[in-house]
Image 1 (tube, rainbow, N blue to C red):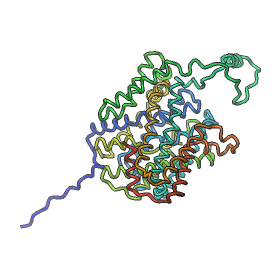
Image 2 (image 1 turned 45 degrees about the vertical axis):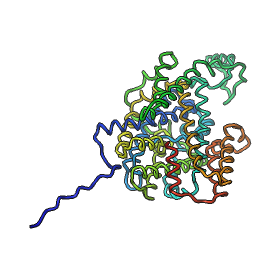
Image 3 (image 1 turned 90 degrees about the horizontal axis):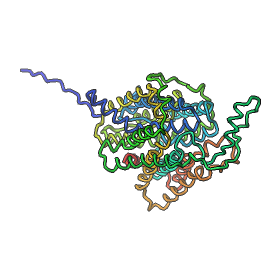
Image 4 (image 1 turned 90 degrees about the vertical axis):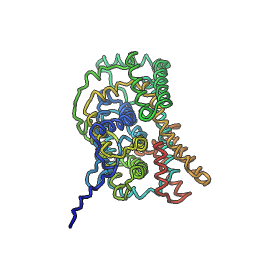
Length: 494
C-alpha cells in the first residue's frame, strides 16, 4: 500500500518574515523615531550654512525624509541583483559628509551654492556606484584604529556646530559681535535709489557685543533639552531610552512655543501635501575637485557601512556574501545619486537602527521597508519640514551636544578595542587627530593654497581619513579581518 507524503513547507528565514500589518507599522514607526532626530539635523545645518529661507530649509527637510524612505526601501527590499543588501537597514544622511559640504557652502551661499553642492553629491554618487565592488575589497586598509580615529574626528568636528547652536539661539544670529550703526545704514541704503551695491563680503568692523548671542534664554533652553535627554537616558528603558533625543527636542519645542521663541507663521502657510520635485534649485553644477573630495568621504562611508552590514548579517543569521556586500555598497552610491537629484545629501546605514535590531530581536527586513514607506509619506507632508525649520537653534543645541558627542564617543569605543601595545597605533591616532583638528583650530591655514582645493583641505574629516589610512599602511601594512570589522561595528551600535 503506497503512502502519499505531505508536502514539506519551506521555512521562511527571520529576515524574510512578513509580520502582521499592525506589527509592521508599529515596529517601522519605532525605527523612524529612533533615526528621526539625526535625519533632520543635516538639512537644518546645511540649509542654514547656505543662508536659505525658512521655506527652502523646510523643503530640504521634506526632501531628505522622502529620499531616506526611497533609499531605505531599495536597500532593504532589493532592486535586482545589483542594488540592496536585503537586510533590515534604515538609511539616513551621513554626518561624515557635513564638514566637506560646509566647506562648499561657505564659499558659495544661496541657490548657486545649492546647485554646486547637489552637483557634487550627484557626481560622487555615480563614482561610488562604480567603485562599490572595489571598496568592498578595501577592508584591510580600514582596521579599527583607522575607523575609530575617523569617527572620533567626525564627532569632534561636529561639536562645533552643536555648541554654536547653544549660543546662537536662532538662525538669524550669526555673530557674537555687531555694528548697530552699520545695520541702520544698510537699511537706509536699501530705501535710497542710486547707491551702488557693496562689494561681496564687505562689512565694517563690529563695535559692540551682540545682545542676542549667548543669551540666558538660549542657554537655558539648550540646558533644558540636554537635561531632559539625560534624565530619560538614565531612567528610561528600552525604546523610550532610544528616542531620548527626539523626546528632548519635542519638549524643547513645546517650551519654545509657549515662551514665544518659536514662530509658526511658515508652518501655517505650508501645505499638507506636496510632491518633492527634482532639481528644486536649478540645474546642478559640477566641479571635479569637489566631486573627488566628496568621493573620498563616500569611500569612508562605505567602509563604515561594510562593518554595519557584516554585523547585521551576524545578528540576523544571514551570511553576507561578496555579491550582497557589493549590492549594499552600490546602494549607498545610488542613494547619494538620488539624494543629489532630489536636493538632499549622501546616505548610509544608520548605526542606531542596526543597534535597535539587536535590542528588539526583530530581524525582518519588512519592518525597515515599512519604516521607509513611513519616511516617504512624511516627506510628502511639507508641514513636517516646516515645523523642523521653525525650531530655534537653541532647542537643537542641547540635542546637538548629545548627538555629535555620541559620534565622538563611538569612535572612542572602537579605539578602546585597539591594541595599543602595538607602539605604532598611538602614533596613528595622535597624528591623524592632529591633522583633523587643523581646520577647526586654524581655519585660515589654507589662505595661500589654490582656491580649487579649499573644500578638500578644509575638511578635518578628510585630512584625518587620508592621514590615518596612510600611517596605518606605513606602520602596520594592509591587514584586517572580517571579525575585526564586525566587532568595530558592534561597538558603534552600543
